[in-house]
Amino acid sequence: MKGKEIYPLVYEIVKRAQKENPNLKNFVNSYEWSKRIPKPQFITDELAGAICTSVSSSPGVGLEIYYQEKVYLKELQITFLDNELTYLLCESGSNGKNFRILGEIIRTVFDGRKVPNEKDKQLLTSL
Image (tube, rainbow, N blue to C red):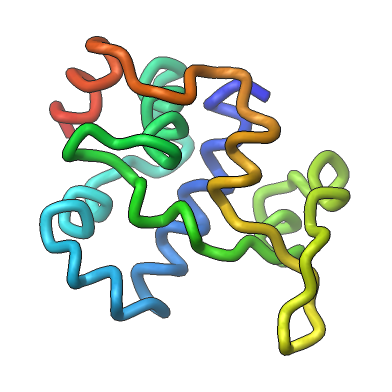
């Protein structure tokens, strides 16, 4: 999947985690930076790719602190990716709901780079 296709899911997970995971605030710079990512309807192809790449590897700026966030069926449904990605929800939580870690989803379906290049770093820094 291209960055712009998977970015709505990344955005949804980041926004949920910002509300529900207070431990993320311990990573002050990364957390503050993540609050500036654009809504899916305002993102370019290049920036979506750079942000998706940053889930796996961030050069001081990006979404690496969200790598371990769980993705549930409801988030796939909200972002209209349930038909394409439900098969990835192969782990079962204590609440009985199936999930998968965001970083694992990105590494499985994102067809972009896994490590940011210089252009990605510039795009990420510009936010």
